[in-house]
Amino acid sequence: MKYNKIGKTDYEVSEIGFGAEWMAEKPYEEIEKLVRYCEREGVNLLDCWMSDPKVRSDLGKAINENREHWIIQGHIGSTWQKEQYVRTRDLNKVIPAFEDLLERLQTDYVEFGMIHYVDETEEYNKIINNEFMEYVRQLKSDGKIYHIGLSTHNPEVGLLAAKNPEIELIMLSINPAFDMMPPVVLDDYFENDKYSDDLGGIQPIRSELYQTCLETDTAITIMKGFAGGRLLRKEDSPFGVELTPLQCIHYALTRPSAKSILVGVNDIPELEGALKYETATDEQKDYSKILTTAPKHSYLGKCTYCGHCAPCPLEINIAMVNKFYDLAVVHEKVPESIQEHYNNLEAHASDCFGCGKCENRCPFGVEIIEVMKKAAGLFGK
Image (tube, rainbow, N blue to C red):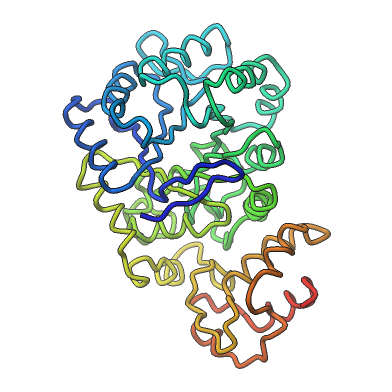
């Protein structure tokens, strides 16, 4: 299992995490088996947004004997009212719900207290400037949460959070389809008719968000990596073709600042399928062959950092140069953090002598030599 450090914290999370939302209907024995399997395989990130008392209690019972193994994302604002989940900012509901979460998880703290499901900038600004955020700060001061995070499906909200030094972790929905969509409400991401035929490449707001997270050292954990399973079915995929779980996982984890993908699984075989990523071949992970041949919404001409351009005879990490270039050009001036990351590369765009071997290998038809020239001019070497 590969582990990635969360920003400036001391925590390293497994790149495959446990999204436990499907545990609500499971008997305890199945949940315990799945938790034990996660522990044996090195999965150590657990997200618990669910307000259902049963699933909270079952998870708490299962992880109790190995609590130190787990890094928990516990959500603030997810409540159980009249036998159903309700997202709310009403502190009269929020406070007892979070206390209930700790009690049922049989723990005094969670590593990351996640401001739950904020998808509108107006709501974000309201939360940050009222008593809700004061409560979150108090939780941190009291040691009930160690770090503050936020979950969102909207890159505009994510961008605001990434610029907020109090927020160290963003849980964001990431997959190749969502990356092409402008900021919309969550339901629109699942409507194929919302994907117009002229969409191609990552939306600028997403690129800016990824760049800002890199600049501010804000970590991203990933939800909706399979778009609720739609990307795994040809008939439902906005691309008109299906991707495999391994391809979706690889796409998500190759985004800048991405640290872990929280996979929602029903049982051990499904988790085993996701964990195959750790030993998969480059060919099995390769999403480019799907996206380049998709009948809809191709990424042609756009670098997706897939790495097919390698190897470079001068050992330029072409995918990384492209990534830093894409992240930098959304700003009037190259951010110092991106410049530093670029400077630390062993070889630079200015080393390129235009042999063209990379372009012959690129499945997306990216004009790499031209990008190298632009990157050399932008970064100064």
